[in-house]
Length: 175
Image 1 (spheres, rainbow, N blue to C red):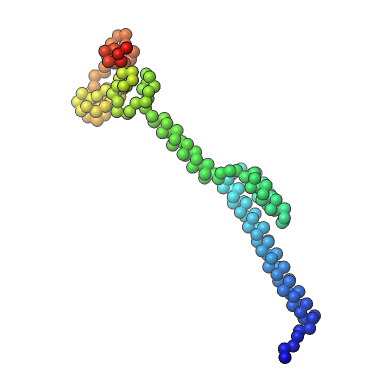
Image 2: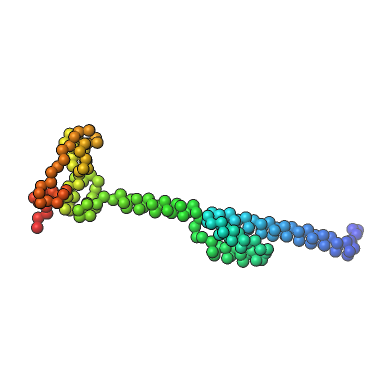
């Protein structure tokens, strides 16, 4: 029949198991605490370039547990909403949107939307472009040489009494 260990051996074995368990759990919490500090430091670096903010955010979680959890909660409340990369992407998107708005062509006289290839504004009959007499490509009114064929273009004279770039009244809307 197996021998029953005496009580002192059992208490010593349980004490040894308790010590090992205590050190394993303690090592886990130390590793968790250290990883929390490292995560906070890396996170705050992605959200701010300010060294003071980076140091303050990291120092919030440096105190030993359970104060580090309170510091983490405070950091999560105070940290910037977006990372620097997200802010940069958002600014690029805004710039592209603004550039798209700026690229919209409008008539210089009546400010109505026009297409890039319009020769005359359909609303107010303002001449927007001219055609090259040699190749027929559209040109800006101020150009004297066609960039497509190299042909010289005579400058147009505006009749007296008409605003510049306006078509004659015979093309205006009926009243």
